[in-house]
Length: 414
Image 1 (spheres, rainbow, N blue to C red):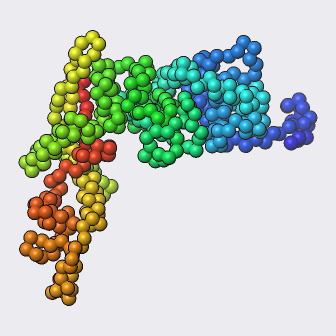
Image 2: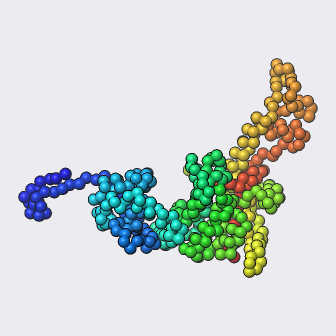
Image 3: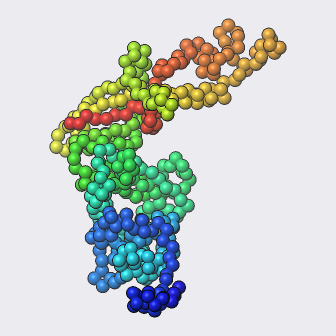
């Protein structure tokens, strides 16, 4: 839009006409400012190679503007980028102080940028440098790091050596998948290291390579590394213990854990009856304290044979029970038994014809009554289960529930 200026404005600006360009800014200015504060353009330019005859915008500024577009528009397509930049050319130029051209964001150039970022030697160097800049910028202290893997499935062609492969999946086993392994700063959730791997691989093989990359930037001892039961493999625990780090993860109900679980549960029940369990309470919004978990701790010695020598370290096992989780398990059991056990028919006293064929009777010929679990025990001549706030350690057996299901294990600082 061209605006004719007044005489006074012409004297001040030295122009007779003023050209007004209208562009929709949205949140792009904020996103670019935050990435510039982290020094992301400089980090990318430092580690991504540039051809000696390459002209136009640098790789760092190209990636930062493209990332701002993805976050703002929710669109990762390369084909739409050049058109978008032409509509934001003045705004982007003012924010970045760089000459902006639509040609810098062509399909071929963006594909070339992605090819550089896909190489581990460039990506890991960028990741390490970005972590060094992020911690002081956000004033963060690294004390707890969480490692976890997730899958992403899609209708995709599977080729040998490709990233998308068939593998174990809880969500869509009929579709191929890829896996993303991340290490993030807890509780903020700030990603510190990521690995994208093919979907047929097991999770436990991802932890040590990821932890080795983290060790380059977080060398101080005493970090607490948390993860799921896949992280409880002996070689992973030995790796962390050997580097003076702590770990916390659920124990899978396999191997020696499955053999020791009945003893741990019996000890927990005995300690509960004696009032010796440690209890954790939470204050609700109404000011009422609610029992969240209760449990006890045992210690054992772990050992591993390494190339240099035989090494041992102490490990703490936390055996606990979540009343809320145990109640949910009990309700689920009652629900399943209600469908598995037939209900007794009406007795003659209530106008019925008595117990018919196929209906279970009690020891004295009377129909079984009460909850399904009690009826099942009565029919088999065993005592009914004891019900109470801490009579069973049901939550201790479900090791995947992070809030109340234990056991977890955590090592001592050597």
